[in-house]
Image (cartoon, rainbow over the protein chains, first blue to last red):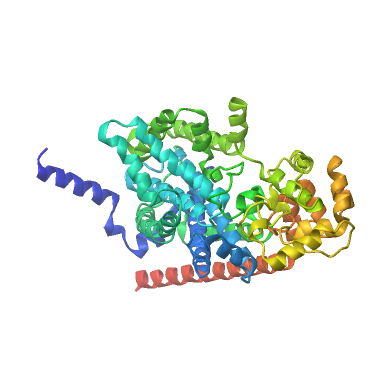
Length: 366
Length: 200
């Protein structure tokens, strides 16, 4: 294949995935229809994830007014927000709950989109950008965890960064140095300190938001251009109009999500789910308290990491990332029933490791 | 090997009573940990999470002359209601000493569960709706409002915020109702316009 042919094929591929001729009100809103069937609830998960993301932006901007990204003041500023600022505790708690709910929604969205074969041609790039959004969302979680600068935040980040460095032991030649260099770039100094906090803060409030705006923009335009995927092999019960029928239902789901979030934010401090010594300010000279672990959405990889050799997790994670990104091509000819079974198995694994990962760890390690 | 900061803390609390002689009382730590299943440390009663020994803020080596005098008065508080304010104890630690006196507190080391029986039942220092006695028994911090058994905190906060929740629910329902009509209005207007264009 010569260069001209390659360019022509690329142009054709992109033109099919981004049909700009459909970029008008009639195609994207007026004529858009949504299939109604047993799995149709999955269509609401993407919007729900976006709702929680918008809550994160609103509450995050409010927290930015008072949060101090310095090792001396970070924890005190978080306490100040919680104890002194009117509604500060509510805003901070809603931010914490919405982050977990956003990641939960994104994971369910991924599984339902997979089960509905929503990555089918011409939606391959919609799927790939969705996987990238999942990675960025995890990045938000990892970087945001450090910002309050308490015991669990700093010690868990140390463990996470240490794991990156250990990858070098499994790489050949010059590549063995790359993870250490990556860790140094992220950490910024010999140990987790001011440079790390500054970098995590920049990532959390500037770099990742810019990245997510770009990728999410493409993802949303792509969804609107191609419409909702068919979702099932059989004929849907009926088709309903996107505007206003589906949009109104979507808004009702957002209303319910908002109320759940408000009640959680007002009534159940996120911190109450952890033992209190973990929330004391980080003391570099103090002993490491028991119970250090990442946020719940990393349990699916954290507990296997504690139980199995690192190389097993590395191979598994690399394969998983590759399979996720290449899903539209790997599962091109797989029927929806099989995809549904895979999605259910993945969901069961995530639930078991999240709820019982610690018990499984103690079962094997004593 | 790591030292247990909770034991260090109770050692220092005992040192208060015996004028500097350190005695370890792991019974309280064992009792709270076993009963609650949670990790606790010296910050439950002390200013510093590693206890009073050391030179960090809240520890003996960091005290000013005035604070040392305060500490001396606290050390002599063998009887209850002495109204002392030890600079190395937090509000809960001082609450224990002021409520029971050091003599009674030290006697409890053989029956640490008695501490919950002897402390005032209605005291709630962090005003989170869970009494200090319950927080001691459940291994949560009596001075941190956001720390408590999640279900208990949820029930208490739900009752306290019910008014705001009802108002927010009303605002959400009304907002959705308004949006519903607004979007239907747009839909009808668009269809009418389309019909006009088709007929015209």
